[in-house]
Image 1 (tube, rainbow, N blue to C red):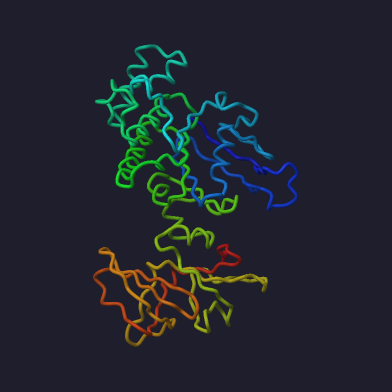
Image 2: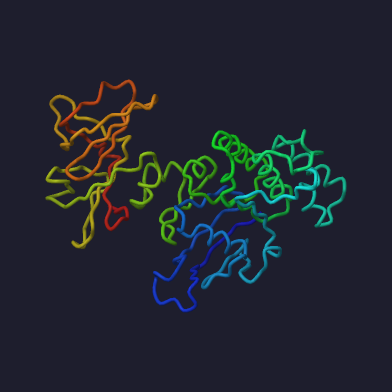
Length: 360
């Protein structure tokens, strides 16, 4: 296991990059602690796989260093870094039995027969594939093949880090939750540093202790699932995390605080000062939007439709030209129709400048 540190890292696939637009990975510094479960989350093309390949030594960064436990491993090969990687598609030997697939990484490193037996049985038990150990891998279902691929990464207890590159891509949706839960259990059992790459927020938030959210080659926030939901550091995080994502409304300063279309909107982070040329936006999650009660005044909206999900009601509305969502608990009264007013929870409503959360 290892603490993984990225120092002044940048990478470009262009031989002579001229500006930020030429970098697949923009400048970054951060540390993953030993034994943690982490996720790299973001849309396709944001740089997740490039960063994973730099950590695994499949790509050498244009600038900066990769350190394992304080040791510079940037020039070292994947084998010298002592890592294991699980890919999107199962990497197994179809002609071998499940047992021999799991034992193969250990045999290559000269482990004793007894140690191989103990370790294979242990990992097979954790993955619930013990009954399959003497079967050939060729005829197994896709989810069991991916379990074997995961097991090949987990079977070695001497690795610095195990990396998962969208490992559930080929798995049927109804089986994904089982493998996600199993992977979380496995991490708690083996306590090896794990990094999980995905564009699926559910996978990231259910697996990771901390999530690294990326957009256009840049890390926009690192935090726990609760931190990403409750206090997005960037409007992209607010929009990307959650279903539906955070409401984002264009804002202007009016008197002592921000407003939207002339209606004052109290926020949790009123700015101490502004430069005057920033693009201001108000962010509030649908869970913290409610309809004004009798005698209250709020932001005028037009209610377009309401959908009952069984757990809550999702209200689609429009404020001016801006779409707005509200999530209402099932036990609340019916949502109004037509013209109405909404109120944002001021402790959960925040102001952003040029996409970034303003610190007050």
